Amino acid sequence: MSDDRAEHQRIRPIRIGILNIMPRKIETETQILRMIWSWPLQIDPVFIKTTSYKPKNTNKSHLDFFYKDFLDVMKTWLDGFIITWAPVEKFDFEDVIYWKELTEIMDILKEKVASTLFLCWWAQAWLYHHYWIQKHRVSEKVFGIFNHKNENYDHPLFRGIDDEFWCPHARHTEVLEEDINEVDDLDILVKSQEAWIHIVANTDASMVFVMGHPEYDRNTLYNEYLRDQSKGESIDLPKNYFENDDTSSPPKLLWRSNAETFFRNWVNEVYQKTPYELETL
Image (tube, rainbow, N blue to C red; front, side, top):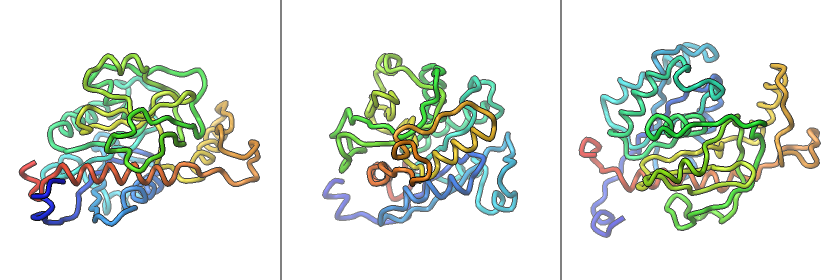
């Protein structure tokens, strides 16, 4: 930050909206909070739910106590926003029950929030809604932990992160590199030979799109594997996850430190961009 701001800064909690549309909300809440609370800045998380779809897998009392409707939250101001993934990627975007509400949310965020972090399906949804970039089904689920190359190592989001690092992926779709390269406002920051595009951002990093799952815990991929198996789906073990694919050994945890650094950098960018008086944003 500038010397003048450093000399006169006032500190307040950073308000981060979290739109959580995953079925197992408490598990997702925990994963996200571990990431954004991994440093000293005080964070005030605001959990948000959709109004056009009522969750069936989370206790209503939990939702009533911890969650608010998006439009009620946006009557005040937020510094940043995180939108979780959703298990709907096999559907066309317009066929998702709450798609109309999601498009309205995306349009408001573009104008009202300093930076939004989109995770997995949501990243593809925004790229489609605002840039008409299509998602494409892949022949085999991108599933496992994969090595990635940092394409823009001096970007503020990657301070302290290795030039190459690991990250989990669990998705049936992808966006194509050539489609992103056609948009002047977008930059590919991280990609992988096996998992393809991982992180994309617009020029001022007010929109950050993460195709993988840096927030995942050690056992999340294995739990997804067991879930898919129980549904009778054809699914292989996550790649690069168990030593010699031996499920009696603990899964490898190769991404946590870089993931925490990435989320800290994002929160720091939000802190740098937003004024003390949020109403002046």
